[in-house]
Length: 446
Image (cartoon, rainbow, N blue to C red):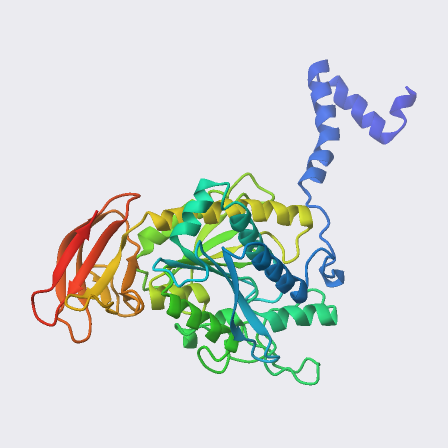
C-alpha cells in the first residue's frame, strides 16, 4: 500500500493492526492532544519590563495633591487637608487628609491611620487612599456603614509618604525597576552612588536589625532610626493622635502582613491573625480562585507596621496589593474595589473590639495620661498602650475573654482591675478615676 511507503505511515499502520478500532482512536486522539495540553501549560510570554514606562493614567504628584484639594473643597464638613511634614531632600509638603464628621474640631474618638507610597514605585497604594477618601465622603449621607465609621473615628489618610521619590520617576522617565527609596543624597539632579533611604526600613523599632546597612542597597535603612523627615512626620502624627489601628498599602504580592513572625511573637498575635484573615477574605487574587495570603512581618526591621504595633500597640497591617508595580487600569479598579471592602470590614471590627474609655483625676476630672497594662498581654520588647493627654481616652484591642488590668500613672496610686470582661463584637467601656492615694475608683459604663 502506498500509505505504508512512508516510515511514519508504516508505523501507524502496524500500530493499528495490533489495536481494536476504539483503542486506536483513543491513541490517535492523545497523540494530537498532548502538544495542545503542553501549550496550555506554558505560561504566556512575560512583558519586557526594562522597556516599560509609567502608564498614562497614573497621576503624577501634582495631580494627586490637586485631587486632595478638590475633595476637601467638595466635602468641607468632612475633609481637611493637613500638612504633616516635609520631604527630606526637596522639602516638599507631605499631606494627610483628615476625615471626620466634625472635621474642624479635635474630637474625643479613636484615630485610624492609612498610608500609601512609602516606596516610589508602588502607586496603587496611593490610588487606594484617594479612592477611600472619595468613597467615604461621597457615601457619608447614603450608606449607613460609612456614616457609622465616619461618626465614630477620626481617620487620617496619607496617600503619598514619599513625594520626592515618586516625583523623581515622572521627571526622569524611569523604567523598570523604577525607583524605591526617597532621594537622600540627591545632588545636581543626577543619581549618585548610594542614593536614597528605604522609608519602610527607617522606622524607630528594631531599626538596627533590619534592612540594608549600605547606601547602595535597595533596602538601605538610613544612618539612624527615623533619620528621614518623611518617617518623622508619620511617627509624630501617629503618636499625637494615639492611633489604635491602621494599614499601609504597598505593591506587590497579594499578601496581608501583620507583626510579627520572628522568635518573639506579639502578645496580640491571635487578634492580629483574626483581623488579617478577615481583611484577606475580600481580596481576590488576580490569576487564581483564591484570596490573598496571610503572613507575618519580620519584627527585626524598621517597618511602619512593626513600629505602629510595637510602639503604640496599634493593630496595623501591611497590605501588598496586586501582582506588579504598575498594573493596567482595569486591574487597578478591581483592586481598589475589593480593598475598599476589606478596609470597611477592618474598621468595623476595630469599632466593636476590646476596651475603650477614659482615665481622669478623681478630684479635678482632668484627663490623665496613664499606662493601660493587660495581664498576660505585655512584653518587654513592646511599649504599653496609654491614654492620650487631651481627653484621657484609651482603647485596647483584645479578643473576647476576661482580663486583669493595671492602670499606672505618674503621681497616682496604681490600681489593679480584675476580671474585666470583653464580649464578642461589643466594646467594654471603662471610666477610671485615679486618686493620689489607694482609693482609686473604677466605673464600668455599659
